[in-house]
Image 1 (tube, helix red, strand yellow):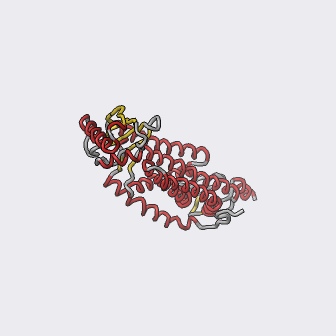
Image 2: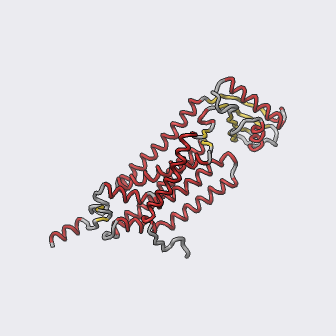
Image 3: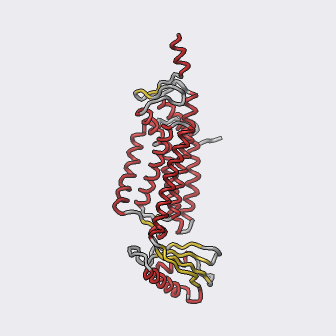
Length: 332
């Protein structure tokens, strides 16, 4: 049976410097742009006006509503179905730079009502309720999103420290941080609106990236026991090549699904799908070119006993004798 990269034998770690140049070359300009321009946050984070609408006419759907509201001069309105198929939630701001007040809420409602009357007529819909979403609510959502990501990092570090070793945990967390920062740079480059769905995509990236890295590190741990007389650099290369078919197939099928969502999905999910797609790409890149080089660098910086019970790196190589072999040599 044909397998992708079935007999892969690439010197991955030889390319680690070029991979670092590519990673930082993409990430740093995007983060600088983000620092200057800031995130394009949705109403869920910045506050705005929430309108619950019940459609009477069958001609009203999400895209028709979005088009009508856009013609009124309101950009970036978030429209989702709520409850039954003819009920919608509209989140919008007439002036994104203005503070959310009772007056701005009423003005936004009036603008949306005027747009809907022009597009569908007065008897085609009912406005059930209108609420103002203050910036405090958005701030709490933003804090919870950041807290969820930080808790994910902490859980990953503790899990890998117990399952493997703290050096593996540092490498995996560092690779995952790379993926999050690269995704934020991607969001900044394309000025993608950050909604709760996009925040969810960032959490997905954390899980996907660390899962891909753990698969490689599991193979590294197996090969450390299996090939006791090989250097760590060789074992890392061998492990990456052995897991490459799984990595490519998993990322390829996931990208196919997310690209279908990008091309065929509704406009409201476009940012979510784009960030998901990029997250799979950067997660695959980091599991191949970032995580293992970081593990090698950590072992060189803080040498200690590896999972074989041998002393670790010395000038870029690994002393591979196990304690039993060392005792046997001394006895001889």
